Amino acid sequence: ISISLASCLAVCNFGLAQELHKHFEVNEAQNIEKLSLSVSTKSGNSFINGVDADKPLEIWGGNENDMAASTFKIQKVNSIKIVNANLTCKDHVGINFTEALTRNIFADNSTNDIWQLNLSEHIPFDLNLNYLMGSAKVDLSRLAIGNLKINSGSANVHVNYSDGNMNTVAMDTFFVKVNLGKIIIDNLDMTMADDIIAEVGFGSIALDCGTDWKMNSKVTASVGAGSMTILLPPAEKPILVKINNSALCHINLSKDFEKIGHNAYGNSAYRENASDYLEFSLDVGMGSISFIDR
Image (tube, rainbow, N blue to C red; front, top):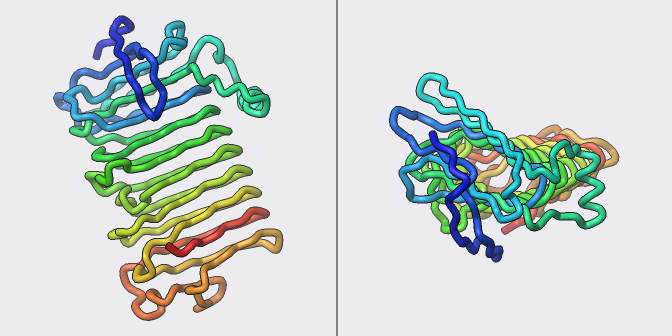
């Protein structure tokens, strides 16, 4: 493992052009079965991408991050390397959720804080991503993600597979949680996840199930006072929806669904053939969930 603050390069990513400096790297992949990476950011714009590289992990920061107060903790348990990265600029040391909410309301988005994380396509990862405020773009194309956990305070997070290449291993659990921010998930089918968990407080989550669902997966979703929209897979995919709702919530099912039991609804493909189906288990308080046909 080596840490370098001297290296720099010019990068233009998602429309943001800025000179980046290397803050941290894991440069040895030998005898590592998996890298378990936890990342916490308090502000700014964060980007995660897969790269064709031998180094398992590199973390770069923008010019405004030169005086970063980031901390990195590295340990190894058997053949799994564990990295905890707390990416913080000195201006944001000690900031809490209330302060983050205030800054968002008054449009302090800390756009000069940029974090770029490059993950090697050649090693499996478990990812635990925590974003207090700001924005994050997580491109999982060609990566091998065994478990993915995303927590958003008031941040806006976009997860996608930009080049259409799905997760290279079957994912165990895909978990997303948002308090006041917004999370958008494109091509959820490309995660190859068995269990999908989505939790909304006062914010929103948009799930695009994609067009090529191969897994017999279960989506467990809970909405407090926020909203969730679900873009369904093509009509030929059998889908079962189970709902535990309150009188204060709003649930909008597409016309293809019919009631088949107590708080249970199936689309026409499910009613014709109830095998190899996608199941949604919903718990809704005062919020709303809408299913949209593709």
